[in-house]
Structure formats: C-alpha cells, structure tokens
Image (cartoon, rainbow, N blue to C red; front, side):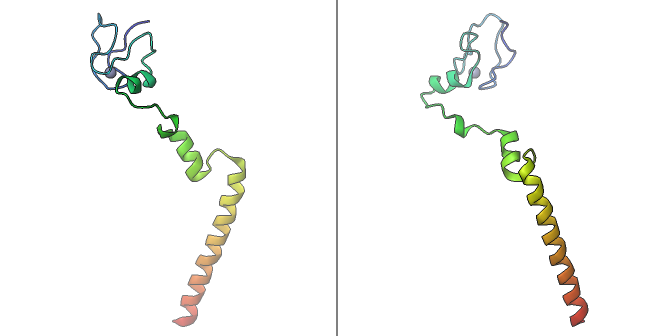
Length: 94
Ligand SMILES: [Zn+2]
C-alpha cells in the first residue's frame, strides 16, 4: 500500500520513505485511521463525535426518509394556510 501524499488525519506531508506520519503517527499498518491519530494523542476515540454530513442532513431535513416526506408536505400545507390567513387579515384590516 502506497503512502498518501498528505496524512489524512493531520494533513502533514508524508514523505515517500516514511512508514508513518511524522506528526501524528498514522501509518500504513493502521490504515491511516482516525483511531491511530486519537490513540497517538491519548484521546479516546468516540465515533459519535465524528461529523457525518449525510447523517446530519437526514436528521435535520429528513431528506432520505420516506416518512419525512409526508411530514414536510403537511408542513407546507400548514404554512400555506397561515400565509393565506395572514394576507386575508391584512386585506380585512386595510
Ligand atoms: Zn498525521
């Protein structure tokens, strides 16, 4: 397995002859893994702390869950009704 040009963990440039990252200690044996990085700095690796953009989108906007679709349609109907009521109120008052 060839060394990556830059360390995936810390961004340090990897020289071709280096068997591991000079900065954080990641190496081919550890698969340049994040765990190696966290082990090297003495922090317990916690997968929950990792930012997963897809999961974030799914959680925030329900983009990939089918049950979320009906929810957002209902929300749009409610929003539309509220807008209509608001406009109607304005028309009545003025
Ligand atoms: Zn590194």
